Length: 288
Image (cartoon, rainbow, N blue to C red; front, side, top):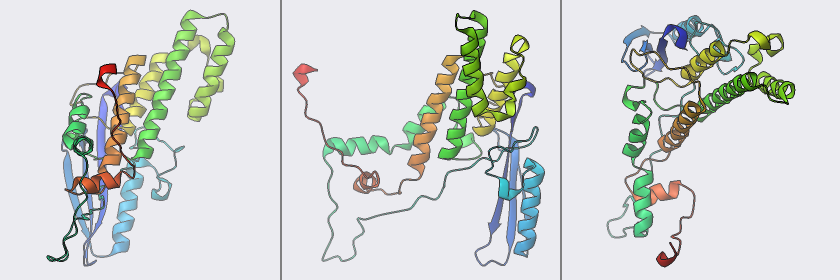
């Protein structure tokens, strides 16, 4: 939950866990300000039905949503948590180089040196972590782990709304020769992206651009939790800031894909998981 105007930037993790022998069920919660560990609670249940009911009641209390409606993009409530869809954190483990017969060892195909170096780079988690740190997003302190692709798509949509609002602000300031048509087009695009804005009732002469940008910035940080400590989040109000956030989302996309690739210590397995054919291009260094 994020609200830039009140410096609210907090998270709430809710999990229902089943013991392996199915003789006990646990509801785990962790909550606090994004970027900090927060506080944890664990409640134990003997019966599955009791645990599921309690889980759904907590979910309803925190989001105002029924659990079955969690993916309904049109349902949002002020001062309530938004459901965030997370990427699968259990990638498939593969190891095709396992030796099953000491007298009949299956050789692992060898990659060309340059392709091998490329695979080392593509699968180096430190590179992703360093890139994230440039955006003040520390993965180790982010409470929710890897964000799903669909969640990242929502964030891109929010940035598009902000870009349209900035375009609207520019048009209102400059008032070009095609002013009315430009305003009508921008409002139409905003209406498609944000039905909740009630564009038809907006008074262009008294529109509060800063308030809209504040709300949309809060929406962005609710979709993509970012640990900024106790500092107040800066309103996304320039094209440069939109570009910066877009770059962040692209890295998150790569990270989400990376997290779901098969885990293996063998480079050929990693290469195979990419489902592509990488070839070394021939070039003449004298023409470079």
